[in-house]
Length: 358
Image (tube, rainbow, N blue to C red; front, side):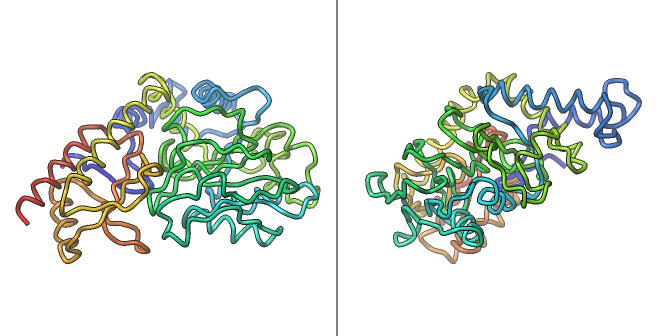
């Protein structure tokens, strides 16, 4: 059976070259006589993999020296709690931008630890846009400002990095490594790995050194950024094989030409798909054009009764996981870094043929 095109919002498809290399090295990694899956995380062999992983991520993202890079567990959802636990540093308030479902989850969790100032929200408009930054209400005594740079469900993505005079915290789970950015503008960046970085099971946290200075000693060690940084993200046994796969993904990205190269490809893919939707009478996307996501393209059918047939025929044609999130329905095509342009082209051709015959 040939491989399908996986348009899932996550876990996402991985490049075949990465999967094939992992297959080739599975039983005997570089003549070590063992699989990476079997290695002690304390062994010199695995530590070399870990060091290469961090070095590659620092290189690909141009991470400054005054930032720590952590490889944790628990997904972005764990960070919803760890961020206020670690970054409040005696303050009582944090600012949040509510741009969609994942922002709401982060806000809900943060409320357990502090007063949350919702500085701006797109909820009244159905999360189809983000209020202009001039309208944001910032508490300049707050510990930080948190935002979700890309919302996977509604397909809303920030095209800019907000600068408001507070340490900036960004959930980049669904668009990290998809576009160039200046890491020095952020206090902390976090991302689950299962969209643009590899398989599920690793959460990358990039945190500026000064935000580790005044740690609350009441934080359990495994949840403390300072303790994790001091112990190489190995306070508990890490997801060793997934670290290895993340490293392979970064090598693949470097071979393509890095983030700037993949960004050009991502722009092309998204432009093609949005043009197909906008040029159709059957398919519709209602997101503010300025904030349309390059990673997650949701659309609905003008005749919703056709949706089951659309999804079924797409699957029969080798395109899976196109069903929109249960909270919004319709179709969602997630076109992360590993989705080839020819995959988007195939989807567009299918959409055109489906519309022609209906």
